Image (cartoon, rainbow, N blue to C red; front, side):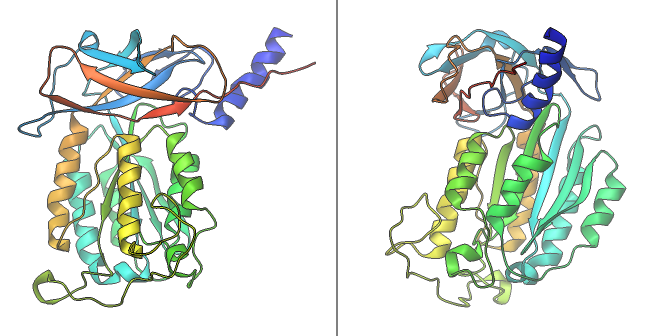
Length: 353
């Protein structure tokens, strides 16, 4: 019976996703290309953690397990899993290739290629594009030539189903990826759902997406390009193309609808900021598309020094409630820490004869 129960439990852990632990397995070691390993129990909470100096905004390297203080619902936890900042990284580039971004496609492609060239040779990259649909055009690989070729073949057109694309990324493309992980998202963020659904927008609502983000482990870096307010004017200057829609009712800034003074692009920015904050990433909003290369370089530098640690929660209750996470660095008041805000302590269904 024990063998049968384990046979049912392990695939079940893979199917319910990382909500309770960030990566749930039955006492299996996690390994990667460089030989690092970490022992994971079904209760382990795994965190990708970035640490910057408050005054210089530079990443802090060389931290050890004992430097981290992890709190869950205000209670100090025992950190017993730790991987150093040079552990290989898995990055998904999720690129908006809808018609609204077409004017900037060549610059976006060039900046994306520069990005994958700037990360370590041991890091793995996947490429996904979306417009009215999402396509994984390059699976995770350390082969840079293949990734560059996939980017060069990208073309733009169609509507924007942003919510569906990011939900697919966190629920289908990222689960099972071992080690540090991140999603770098380039978009104008304006799902057609926000503009009356024409062309057709996502089937996923923002509230559903945000819940999925709360369940996800990767850090997400949204790069928002205001293709409504700032078009391809001379020198990259402002050139308003169309007025954002304001006719929405019964909503709030966290929902998929705009209200009152919240124009669709303002709401899109607010939603992207929420996604970044929840996962421990940063949200960027370049004033000119030419700034994109510098932003990609900044993200690459941020990801280059990142820590992965884990703990078994002192509160072992599986009550489906939200657990808030805070991380601090011991005796380093100048350190600013970013990681995901928490997780839901999901119940684990039991198998029956």
